[in-house]
Image (tube, rainbow, N blue to C red):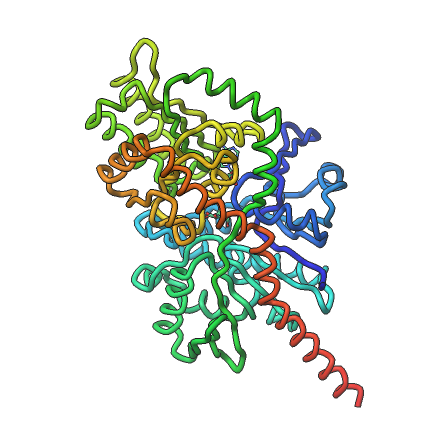
Length: 486
Ligand code: ADQ
């Protein structure tokens, strides 16, 4: 197997300085890292990315953080301005909201695009510097959609593959992007493009048809093909999975059993509903809280008998919109607890911090209902992690129909429209009343999918789709080499 080079905006850990020479290293949270890190740890390879600190990167702490990672780490440097305009700007104030259908949250500042291209060029340099002829180059996510174009300009001929972790929007929304054509042209410089769901793939092809008059979509049985500038680009959907066995094993451990027992003891006779999210407006946390409030208002039988445990991990707090968003959540939690709590019942337990893995698994293990209602989500790994940890094959999943995970888990989950507060409130009641037999039947179906289509299956199917390309690229190189030798 060719050497794997993973390229993503962030490395799987973050460096931070508390004073001039004092550095802290924390593991990064988020779906991409949760999925890709175990794979690189197992197979080895190289991870190129930014360690999350603007300016010069200190060599010592970086070496310390990565010495037993099992793979090589190549850091990319960003200045403060680049961080602001590329990362906070184009990536998170243009692409992120737009691709989650939230165009009103976009700030289309033209300087952001220039910064985006410049930083993508930097990543391209890092890739060109450390890659060899037969490497499998796998670029991840929406921050780096321009990298292949930058590499083609450097005449790098290795097969270039890309996976988009977030949704791809339908044309009516994508059309609002000022750089729509330049971005699609850049994406079409990859040889293989993977999406999370059929929906995203369909949306992408729809945009290519409408925006790129010189590209031709050729439908195929397995991978779709786009012909563009005398090249063939393959496209497919590859729903990302989790390391099922490691979550299941974690849920079976004594440590988790103890923590879980303690948690259950604190909430005797009550059903626990769990929400676990990064702080992000796409995750639908205020809508979820309003639905929970609506359920308590309309269904008195739930009062005193359910507790919503909402865990929010801080994220992108430097962006003002995220800060305001946190304040909205705080106010809603205060309102619900102020209105409904009694001397021995607090309806919402709110944690604003990252949980360690054991704690997270203990919560998955202990909570009767998982409440996963993003407004839109590429996949949503929390839904899958919850299923993997239900080792007694019970538990109910309330899942947004707009999460990518809904495509795979619809046979077991209670699907809801997260914007419909009353429908979601009804789903809470339904989940609360669901019989043990039905809980088990539904959970069994979901666990089967999550177990079979796990993260290793995801990597294998993507690499298999890319393997042919790698062979073609190296054959192309050999032919060119022979003709030069003649
Ligand atoms: P994210 O938007 O980060 O990922 P998600 O898929 O839910 O969303 O992954 C979040 C990860 O962070 C999970 O692995 C979860 O365990 C962890 N996490 C969340 N809250 C935590 C907490 N309080 N403490 C500790 N860990 C916590 C992006 C896309 C998703 C897509 C993934 C993977 O937005 O749609 O599923 O990439 O492709």
